[in-house]
Structures are given as structure tokens and as C-alpha cells.
Length: 76
Image 1 (tube, rainbow, N blue to C red):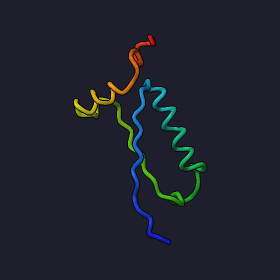
Image 2 (cartoon, helix red, strand yellow):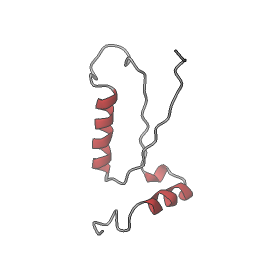
Image 3 (tube, rainbow, N blue to C red):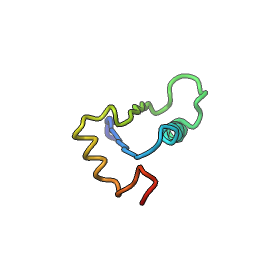
């Protein structure tokens, strides 16, 4: 059996703050279905959440161009 390696899985999603918080909660429950268990999770994990203000300008523009026209306006 090979040694475990660290892996990074990145999601960039257009969402309101409330929707992003809901997604964060759902991902946490998926990674750790029993949040009240003693000690650390059997499989260690961490999550970092940031809104687009944490992106550098080029990254923000790159991601915004990936979404369909009107994605954040209620149109389209």
C-alpha cells in the first residue's frame, strides 16, 4: 500500500453569502458526519473558505468569465 499524500480539491462557485455558508456546512457534514466525536476526525481534513475579495484581480476576472452571462444578476 502506498503512503497517503496531501490532495487539494478547489471549488469556485457563484453563490450568495448564505448559499456559500450552506455549502460549507454540507461539505463539513460529508467530510465529518459525526461532528461531536471525540478527538480528531479519522481522516484529517481542513477547509478554507474565502469570497472573491480574497482573489487576486486576474483570478477573479478569470473565474467571472467562466460563468454564463447574467449569472449573478437574476437574468439568463
